[in-house]
Each structure stands twice: as C-alpha cells, then as structure tokens.
Image (tube, rainbow, N blue to C red; front, top):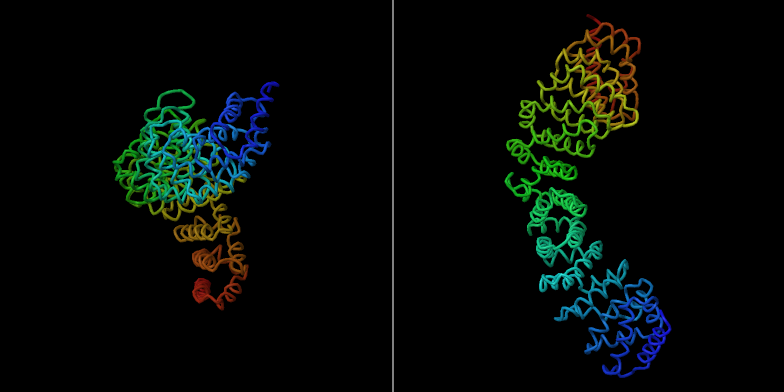
Length: 564
C-alpha cells in the first residue's frame, strides 16, 4: 500500500470513528475510500479497518437499515475475505445485524449479505450452529426458490449450504423446507462444472441422512444425476469425468435406503435402474464400478433379485467380470461378485443361474491373485451351492477348483480368504452328499483343513466343519477313516469335548460325528485307547439336558459297536 493510500485510509477511518449521527452524506465518501481500497486488493486494508475500532459503528449502520446498508454490507463482505479479521467481525456483532438482511427483497443486498455471513462464519462451528439455530436454512432455500435464475446469488446460497451441511441441526432443518426440489432444479440447469460440483457436494453431504435420501428420490434427484451422466459420457474433460464419478457414487449412496432403492428400481423399469445397467457396459471404469455396486444394492430383497434375473442382468455382470480377470480393476471385480452373490440368495435364482452356466464362467476368476477378489469369489460360489445338490457335486469333483481352494485354505496373510475357502470346502460336502466329492476332497488333502476348521474360533464355522465330517464318515467311512486317523481327528474332538469354553452346540455336533466314527473298527480302537468313554461320562451330567442326552446316546452306540 503506497503512502497516499495509507493516508487516505487513516483519514477515512478517523472520520468514521468520530461520526455520531451516522449521516449518509457524511459517511458515504469515507466508506467509498475503504471499499475502493478493499476492491483494489490493497494489502493490509482489511486488518487496519478491523483494528481501528470502526466495526461497531458499521454494525450500528446496518442495524438502522439506512441507504448505506448495501454499501456497508459489501464492505464487510470484502473485508471478511481475510481470515484474520473474521473474529473481529464476530466480536463487533456484525453477524447478528447481518442476519435480518437475508429477508431483503433487493437481490444485490442479498448477494452482499450472503457473502459477508458466509465468509465471516467460514469453518467456525460455533457461528455456523448459531446461524442454523437462528433460521438461516429456510432463508437460504427461500432465496433460491425466489431467484432461481440469479446465478451469483444461487452460488452464494449453495456455498452456504455446503458449509453448513455437516451441522446436524442443519440437516433436520433442510428436511423440512423442500431443499430437494431446489437442488434438483439447479442441477438440471447447472451452467458449468463449478456449479455442478457445488451442487453434487451439497447433495453428497445431505444424502447421508436417511430422511433426506427419500426426499431426494421423490424429488427426482437420481433421475437428474442419471441425465447429467448421460450428457457428460463419452468425453475426456477431467472436470466432466470427475462429475460423472461423484454423481454415480451419489446414486449408489441414495440406493442404500430401502424405500429410495425400491422407488428407483420401479419393478425393473425405472430410468435409474435402466441407466445403471448401461453403466456395466461403459468403457469408464468408475461407471462400471458404480453400476456393479448399484446392482448389489438393488439386489437386497428376493423379489428384486428374481425380477433382475428375469431381465437378464447376470450375463452383463459376467461380461464385466471377465473384462477384469487379468490385471483388471480389483474394485470392479469385488463389486461384481457382491452383486452376483446377492442375486444368488433366492433358491429359485440359484437353479436358474446354474442352468445359465454362471458357476463355470466365474471359475475363470480363480486365476486372480487379489485377496479381496478371492474372498468374494469364494463367498459367491458358496452361496451358489447352498442347498444345490447338483451344483455342489459338479464343483466338488472339479480338481482344478479344489486345488485352488486348498491353496486359499492356507492363506496365511488373509484370514477372510482362509475362512471362506474352508467354508466352501465344507459346503461342497454338506450340500452334495456325494461319495465322489468326498473322494476328490480326500485326494486334494482337504480333510486336514476341515479338521482345523472344526477348531475355529467361530461357532458357525466349527459346526459347518463337524457336519461336513459327519456326512463324509456316514457316506464312506472306509474312505475317510485313514485320513481321519492320520489327521488326529479323534484327539481333536476329545479336546473340544473336554474344553469348558467350547459352545454346547459345537459339542453336540462333535458327539454326532463320534457316532459316525464308531462304525470304523480302526477308529473304534483309537476311541478305546483315548478313553473317550470317560469324557462322555462327564458330559452325561452336563447342565444342558440336550447335550447330556446326546452323550448317553453316543456311549450306548459305542457299547453296542464294541460288542459286534
């Protein structure tokens, strides 16, 4: 700032500070000096004004609502660009006197007021909460409703909403004032990428509220987002690609609400659902990912899953997955498999998907070296064979599949993959009850993994393993007795029965398995040498009558088999 500017600033501040009547003719020339220096971005001007003691006088001018109001508001807005002066503005009561000016019918006045308040309260949680409590939210929405074509004014309101969106009370207030319709209208007429991003940011912040999710859907926000994506697709502009990514992610987020998801699905004929299907075939990886995630969200109830299968969604997901098998996008594979897994939950869908060759096609993903993909692939296959005798028989006899499952049963660095691999192995035996599957599992050295799984810390996994082992022994005791003996199955079972921490239902399943093992003369010898009868005798007095009764039954079976 040159000397002449410094002198002019000092004189203007001195004149304002001694003014008592606040006469327009006296103050205006001095306010012009301050405003011109601020608009010319003269360094240090804002700080000198704030420290001069004139801010309370400016607040007094605003309180009077005189012809100087617009000029003073603009002056405060320009001054508040500097973070260093904002606390001075708050202390002088400027926010309090600016708030009523948001009810003005003068659009320039509204613009200056919005900017002044927004800048003073930027990143100030206390002031932002105060604004919300004093009714700023309805005013901002009303302004956008009254002047929807005034782009600078709409921008100021959107920025304010963006800054206030994280205040809980603001979300509650917004849910009551119809903000969804305003945002939808502005999204449709957004003139540039900057406006789009601003609206998308507001929608993203507010979309975390379940109440607003439904409002957004009812106001047509997902359709507006889909239309925007259609318009921007095919280009290479980085701003447009960013908008596509944010908008598609936002649609996926809105689908997390059950009611909002169902409205977008529209029995498979909804515009949003149709657009989501097209994303699966897009060349844009971000859209592919959002498409797969959205399909997984739509597949959250049986009726949707059945309808989606009828409408042919599965081949599209499989085509997408096959694109990414070799050095593809892990997130897309993960999302695609999540969608397939959800679709396979209804029993009727399992049969249809197997008839359509889904199991064979997703086996191409066995080559993946990425643990998240392996984890989802195993879970999807397990869901596919659940209750399906034929499918589990086919997969259970597949030596290449089983060899890969065995590798994953030993995945030391990924407990999730290891757990899912073991669960699939148990599921193949449980659901097929097929002697050939049992032989293939034995040949692949799978018995040891099932026995290890029986000692898992998860009750559900323990039970699945014990049931699979019991089925294997019931179907072909001759084939399994040697692997069982070599893998120390009986000592493992005895240890489980003796352990007071092991769950009652697990012990119950272990007793059922021992009953089956008693049919083997080789294993009966081991039962005798381990003195299992003593363990059973202790259990026969267990507080669980169901477990005690099962222990008595097993002792009777052992006695009977020892006499034969």
